[in-house]
Image (cartoon, rainbow, N blue to C red; front, side):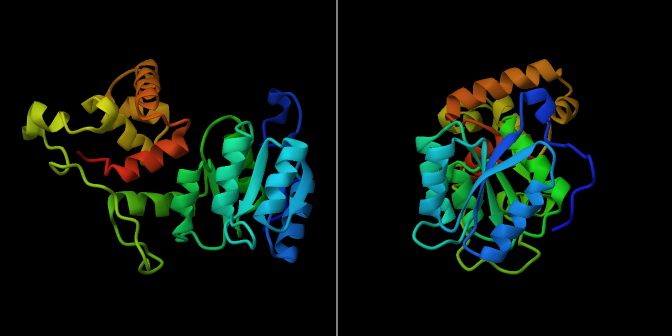
Length: 258
């Protein structure tokens, strides 16, 4: 992992009322201690605990109430997916950023569904880690470029560049297949949870990694209109953030280009 640039504060601590409190969970001692050391060099971040497995991570979250947990996926006793599920259920004020060795790890999608808001590969640089921590603390999704690509590949059904998946997670296709202009009102009726056609379009663009401003430009509407659509689709689908929205879109086969 790259060292932090001196004085570079990308965590937004100055505007959020104090340093971001972080717990690090990884069963490999060298990796765990390296991440703790790296975070210690970043202004605006305070490491309040480190764990060697998921059980210890959940205990440390209960004890310290951190803002963010950096969670390895593969750990003994309790893996990162189950630990993420428990942290998000028992301590909803703590966000989880998953750490993975490979961007094509199938457990990424299980972690997303468990409530993880960010994903980083373990070769991420200091600024990338700090940005992901700041993003999830502010309620956004913190995804490394490699993981973003992997999510989009799985959402679109494209083969991953890193090789075949042993057990691919298949999206549930809409009953009538992808929406087409000629499908008309009959096709709109099959959208899940009462989503409108426009809300589904916005959801697909969120899943493609676009910001609100980019979605507004793509759909030729105002950012305020996009925000309204997002609020409505979040309420209908019961997702809490953009990371869960991506998981929902993947599950229901909603992708860009309808």
